[in-house]
Image 1 (cartoon, one colour):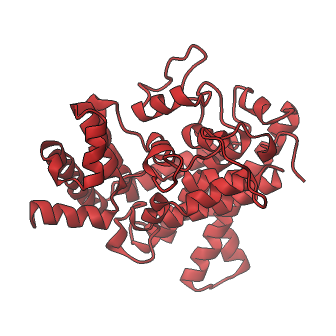
Image 2: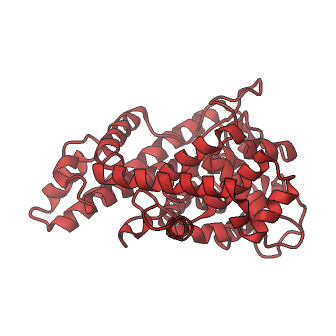
Length: 390
C-alpha cells in the first residue's frame, strides 16, 4: 500500500511534450522502460566505475552499479510505501551522464568545459534524456515525466537557494537551459523516491567498492576488521561460522555491512516521515531537509570508510597511474575535435552547424561526443586518431 506522500503517476506534472497515456503501464513505468532501452544506458556496460572497464571481468561497471542501485532503491521505496517504479527510474538514470573513465574523465571534462558553461554528470544525464537520445519521431530525448527529470537533476538536494542563487558554484549550462523550458524547482529537495535513489547510490557504491578493492588486492579483510562500519560484521561472522573459508567469510561479512546501511536508512526515514507527516510528495519537497538519510552515527562511520577507500583504493598507485593516462586521453580527444571538428561523425558536425558554429557551441558538442564514449571506444579512437603511445 502506498503512503499519501508517495508520488502518484496519475497526478504527474506530465511531460514537456504531451503524449497519450499507456493503457497498461504507469507514467513512471514508461520512464523506467525508456531509460532501459536507451542507447546511453547500454553504453554504461563499458564505462568505468573505479577500474577501467577492461581491467577485469568481475569489477563493477557503471551498468552493473546502476542495476545494484535500482535494486536497493526498489527495496527501500517499497518498505517506505513509495512508488517503486519512480525510484527505480531515477536510480537507473542517475549515471547516464558519466564520461568514460568515471570521475577521472568527468574531472578532465569539467576543467576543459569551464570556459564554456561547465560540465557535470548529473546535468549531462538530464541533457541526454531531454535532448541527445534521438529515436522518437515527435521529440528529442526520452520525454520523461517531470518527477523523473527532477530526480535526475537534484536527487542530491537543492541546487539553488530561495533567492535563486546557485548553492555550489555556477550551474552547468545544460541544466540552466532545460530548467528555463521546464521548471524543475531547483530550490527544493527532490521528491521522496529520488531521495531514496540518492541514498541507494551511496549504499551500493560503499558496498561494491569494498568488494572490488578486496578483489584487486588494494587492501585486505584484516584491514576491514579495524574499521567501525565493517569490524562488527566480520566479528559476527567469525562467531557464527568459525573457520569459514575466506571468500565465504568475506561475502557473509560484507552482506551484513550492506544490510546495516539499509536498515539504518529505513529507521531514520521512517522516523522523519512519522514526525513530518507530509500530506503528499510536494510537502516532502518543501520540508527544507531530506526525509531519507543515514543516522549521524552511520554517517560518521561511512566518512571513515570513504577516507579509507580514498587512500587505499581511489588514490592507490596503480589507480593513479591509470588516472593520469586516461586524463590525457580525454584531454587529447577534446583538443583534437575542437581544432579539427571535421573529424567528428556527420550527425555531430550537423549539431555544430545548427548551433551556429561558435566556439561555445562547438565545445558543447565536442563534450557531448566525448562524454558519450565508452572506455574502450575512447582508447580505440585515441589510438586511431593520435597513434600508439601518443
